[in-house]
Amino acid sequence: MNVNLLNTFVTIAESGTLSKAAEKLFISQPALSQQIKQLENYFSVQLFERTNKGVSLTEAGRIVYEYSTKILSLCKELDEKMNALRSSISGILTVGATSAIGGYAVPCSIFIFKEKYPEANIKLRVGNKRQVEEELRNGQVDVAVIEGTRPREEITAEEIATEELFVIAPNNNRWSGKNTITLEEFLKEPLIVREQGSGTREIVEGTFAALGIKWSELNIIMELSSNDSIKAAVEAGHGISIMPSIALKKEVYNKTLVTLNLEGINLQQKIYVAYKEDKILNKLAKAFIHFMRLPSRGFC
Image (cartoon, rainbow, N blue to C red; front, side):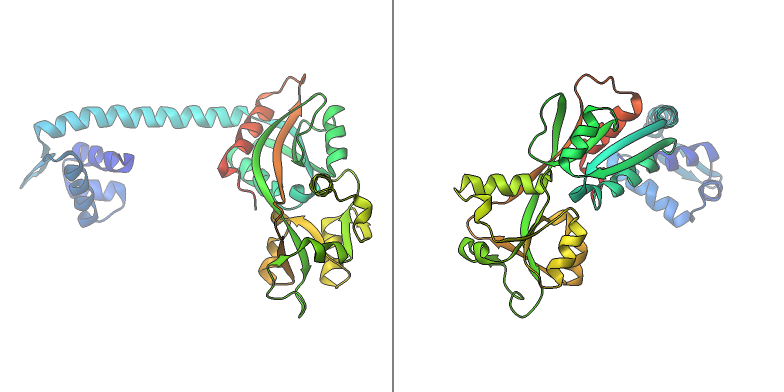
C-alpha cells in the first residue's frame, strides 16, 4: 500500500474537486486521476462518483476515507516520534577502527549515521587491531569496528560482515590478465606485509600456519604500517602483498593494481563491531552499534 496514494485520496475527498486537490498537491489533474485509478484498481471498487459539481465519496470511498485518515495520522505520529528520538540521540561518540576499514569503509558509515542523527558528534580513531583493542579496553574509544580474528578479553564483538583478501600485484606486463597465483609462485615472490598487531597480518599468519608454512619461510622484504604505503610500494613494482578488497576499490577502478586469488586457498577475514563487556552504553553508542549491524551501514 502506497501511503502517498492515500494522501492523494484524502485530499480529493476533502477538497471536493480534482482541480482544487491538484492545486494543493502541485500535480496535474490527469496525474491525479491516474493515482486514484491505481487506488481503485487496488481495492477493485469505485471510490468516487463524478458529478458536474465535483466528486463525492461512494460507500466504499467513505470506508477508505475513514481508514486513510487514521493511517495518515499514525504515519505523522510515527514521523514525529522518530524525529524526537533522533534529536534525543546526541553527544560525543569516539569510534575506533582498524586501518584496513577505518581508512576506507567506516568514514562512509559515519557520514550516513550523521545524516540520521545530526546532533551526534562522532570522532574516529584509526590504528592497527592491537592498538584499537587496547584503546577499547582502556576507555579511549567507546565502540570499535575491527577486522581479523574475534577480539577477546573483556570485549564483546558482533560479526557484521566478511571481507575477501586478495594477493595484489602491479598492473604490468607480467601480472596483467592474471587472476590467480599458485602457492609455489607466491612463496618465491618478494612480499610486503603489515606490521605485527595488524588484523590482516593476523589472518594471513594464521592461514599459512594452518598450511604448515612458517612466517619465516615467506620471502618478506618489507614490513609497513600503512595500507597506502604498501599499495604504493606494490604499484612501484617492489613486490606483492595481501590486502582486503575493501581497501582496493580505487586502485582496481584505476587499474593500477591487479588482484589475484591464491590458488586453492580461501583468504577471508571477519569484520566486527565491538565494545567493552562491562561498559554501560548510552543511547548514542547503542544507536551506532545497531546501525553498524544493518546492511545499510554503507561501507564504501
